[in-house]
Amino acid sequence: MTETDRRIAVFESQLKGAGLRMTQQRRLILRVLAEADDHPDAKGIFTRAFAHDPTLSLSTVYRTMKVLESQGAIERHAFEDGISRYEHADQEHHDHLIDVDSGEVIEFSSDAIEELQRRIAAELGYELVRHRLELYGRKKQPARRGGRKAS
Amino acid sequence: MTETDRRIAVFESQLKGAGLRMTQQRRLILRVLAEADDHPDAKGIFTRAFAHDPTLSLSTVYRTMKVLESQGAIERHAFEDGISRYEHADQEHHDHLIDVDSGEVIEFSSDAIEELQRRIAAELGYELVRHRLELYGRKKQPARRGGRKAS
DNA sequence: ATTAATCATGCAAATGAGTTTCAATAGTGA
DNA sequence: TCACTATTGAAACTCATTTGCATGATTAAT
Image 1 (cartoon, each protein chain N blue to C red):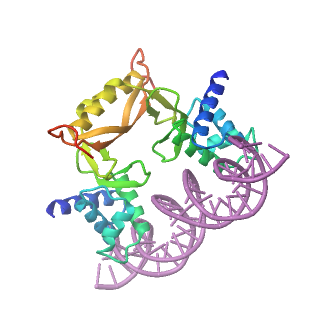
Image 2 (image 1 turned 135 degrees about the horizontal axis):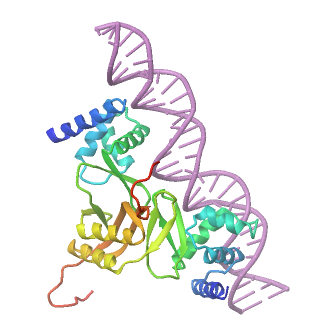
Image 3 (image 1 turned 180 degrees about the vertical axis):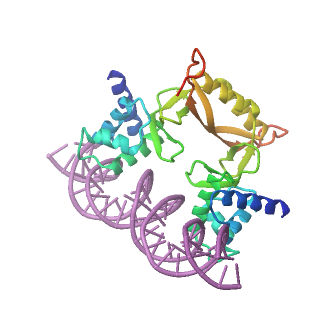
């Protein structure tokens, strides 16, 4: 709670600095995002926020996501289905592994892979600005004693 | 030419095996793709093919891309703008580096990064099925003798 | 507190990539 | 050549996201 409120206050001052306003809707959406531990899309955020304020509209969610993103308060990701998903940006950089069976998104980070990417870009004559890395995987079954089982 | 024709023949037999037909449109689109050395989207493919057959429709391009993809003849990629871009699949696996200034797409491959990804997935308890890796970079200026220049 | 200035909102209409419906056409095997 | 059915073009449709517009809310100044 306190942590969420601190984030909201920070965002409010960012808005102020840009000549923008802190509205009830933005506060609500920000709160929903802070409480989310997954990667909801606009509709998902709308549904959760709508429960607290049935006058909220989906356009406002989309507009708010743009503002939040431009202020660096959230990150937007589009996985294979192309739909934009969001997460708050107050955490360290990480990439995503998507479970191809369940759709579950697992976060991970690897300094080794970051470094390797930088080196590859450099070898091609480029300075790395950003990257997108998504791993799609299937849960490994724990090894079974006694070998193969009858179907 | 011969190479392209060989590819088309291979694809035709793949189609036949699936009970599908080799049409003029598919032949044309396949030819356009074989001649492309970039990563065109559906509209781009349509434009190029349309020049050879003004009766072609955009829906046919989309439909053909699905058939081609399901037969493994092409690969589909969606970079940051979310639009699907295509390339023929008769080359080794590679990832892409996108020049953030020009939009140019450079292909590269790295066994080290492939291996690292596999290891990361394994550490999380997953078997890697596929991945998406895009580097976004800016061209490095070659070092200039004499230091900074006046604007 | 009240107000003026204007940013933000809700709603509905618009967009744009991609898909689908349907009647007409064209490959394919016999 | 024929019959069968996959494929096509055109238009309608989907679905995520954006936008125009009139109204409402926030802010800084009074």
